[in-house]
Length: 400
Image 1 (spheres, rainbow, N blue to C red):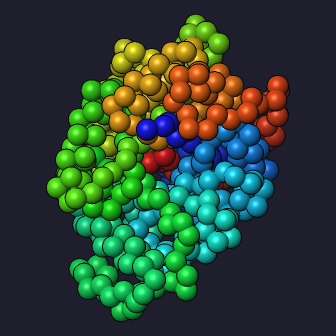
Image 2 (image 1 turned 120 degrees about the vertical axis):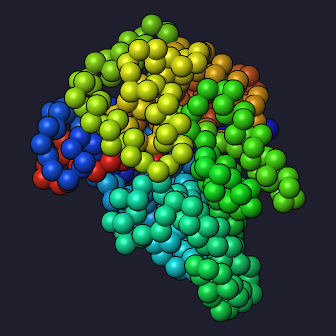
C-alpha cells in the first residue's frame, strides 16, 4: 500500500495567517468585532492556477476543493484549472441533496471526459444546519446522511450503463442513466464521525476520510469503518485530512506555528469557538475537544498541533516539525492503514513547496511512494498577494 499525496485549493482565499476572511466572529453576517487581517489573498483564478501548477509540479496526485457559500463553486473552478494542468486530479467536494443525483452523475461523466479522467469526488453531507438552510435544505443531521446514502445509490446506478430505477424516501427515479458512463468511475471520498455516517461510508465510500486526530483515535475510526464494511462484503480504503508546517529544522517549524498562534487575539478565538460549538458535526466536536479552546498544550500528540482548530472549522490540526519529523508521522499513520493524505498549509502556495521539496523526498527514500516525482527546480514562484476585497459577509469556512 503506497502513500497518495494530495494538496488543497483555497477557493475561499488564504494568506499568511489563520485568521482568514472567513473567520467567524459575530455569526458571519455583521462585520463588527472583526480582527484586522493582513496578507490575505483573493481566490482569483490566477492565484489558484499557481497553486494547482505547483501541486502538479511537486508530484501531488490531486487537489481538494471545498464546498459552501463561503467559497467559489468547486465544479466550475476546477474545470477551469483542468485546462491549465496536465496530470493533476481534482477532488471536487459537493453536497448531496442540493442537486439531482442523476444530474450529478451526468456532470461527473462529462467532467471525466473533458478532463481525461482526472475527477475524484468528495461527498460532504453537511454538519451545519445554518449553512444547509442557505441552500434551502431543512433536513436534520441524521436524515441528511440517510439522503446521502440514497443519493450515492442513484449516482452509481446511473453510471451502470443501463436504465436504473430507484424508489426511496428521498429520491424516486425511473430509468436513470448517463449518455456514457464515466471512464474511469470517479473514486468517492467520504467523511463522517457520527453513528449515522458510519454505515453510509461502509456501503458507498471508496475512501473514508478522517480529520487529523491522534493515531490511537484514528485507529479506532479505521477499525470501526473497516468492520462495518466487512459486514457488507466491502473493502474501504482510508485517508486523513491534515495541515502541515514542515521546515528544515523543528525549531523553524515550531517558530512558524507560534507566529500563526500570535495572530490570534483572545476575542477572535472565543468568537470562533462559540460559533464552532454550535455545529451538529460529530467530527467538528471531536476537533474542538482536542484543545478545548485553550492555547495550552496544543501539541496533542508528537508533532500534531491543534492550534489551527482554535479559529478554523473542519480540519483543525497540523503536522509540525522538521521534514524528517513530518515524514515520521505520515509513516506512523500509514502503518495504521491510512493511504491518502490530503494536506494543506498557510499560505498554500509556499507550504506546498516546503512539503514537496522537504517531506516528499523523505517519503520516497522510505519506499512509501508508488511514483517518485522528479526533483523540483529551485525557486518558488511568487504569489500575487492581492488582498481580498471587503464588503462581503464573513462566513464560517467549515468542512475543509
